[in-house]
Length: 254
Image 1: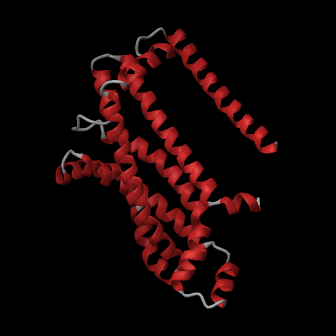
Image 2 (image 1 turned 60 degrees about the vertical axis):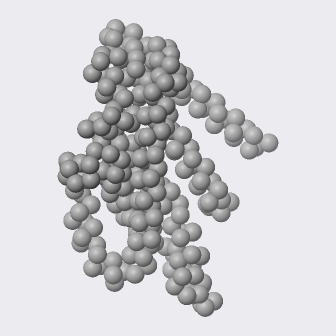
Image 3 (image 1 turned 30 degrees about the vertical axis):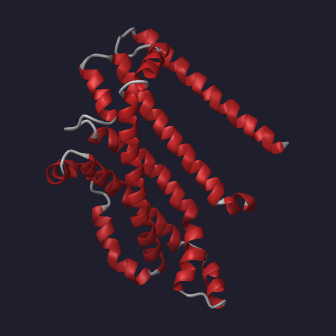
């Protein structure tokens, strides 16, 4: 019963947020009276029309780029982050390189990637992967470094080797932080995706939005914005669901 009330409360809060956002959007368009900010109903009609035509293809391309980038950043950042957190003596040698390169805005390398890797998917995926990799690496390393030593000692006392420690202690212990870094990385990936898709390309939601803007098709522009927002929202819900399944022990403990 309590779980049902909790679910109902979340659904009501979500629907209320949607209504409030649409109301604010409608008020802004009413006050500005500018064709660049169409009313929500016109934008939604344009979205439904565009998703049945070319927008669906652009959405698929953008989704592919984001998912591949997050996957590559995860399979590289998580093992390296856990390894550095587990081995402080190695981390001390590698940390200066991370501190020197992490603050550099990676988007400045986009022209280089476009020249070297071409204007296709590869350059955009490499750029997004590079940016999100650092977020996942640093978060995972800090989580592994701050893991309770008692857990490590208790499992090691049972004769566990390095692989067993990684599998049964460090990975489960770092999983909540890893999923948090993926949420943060998702927001960054979406922002970088839009920027990357506005340069020398003819596919992706970013291109669709800027192409609509260049033709002064403001309803179409907002249709692209809605599509990008929905894509990010659905991916965020997927990560939230993954945390509930993979970190069920955390919810039971709380």
